[in-house]
Length: 139
Image (cartoon, rainbow, N blue to C red; front, side):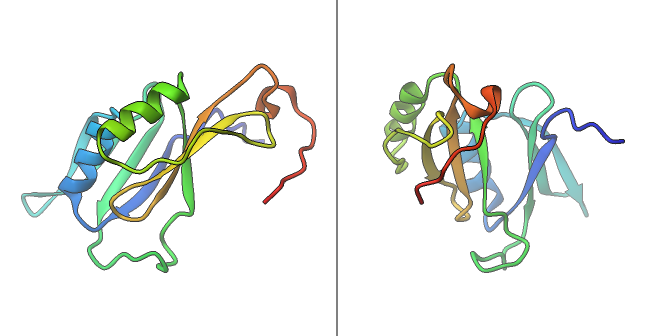
């Protein structure tokens, strides 16, 4: 039987690689771990989320919100969601207000330059991810 340790990476497509790299570096503080090269030029890169988790990005100028290859969203756990929101706003990026979700985690949402939705997540002592138990959604 396979035992999953953690999310290794999420792959997204980028309309503009450098705008995408800048967003993840400057807004979310994620450094480039390495680049993917093809024909002597960068066509993708791996972003470090600390530990062994990464976001993999490849150039796909024709990617669109309706593209079947685009992900719905991915979630980044943050240490202090209020500080994260303040930092993101300081970069002139729209972010939703913090809310307590039905799983007893705080969340806020942003969108990257390619339309990929990103959930920011801060756990609490009551978070279902740690305590278990079914939760009723309100959306």
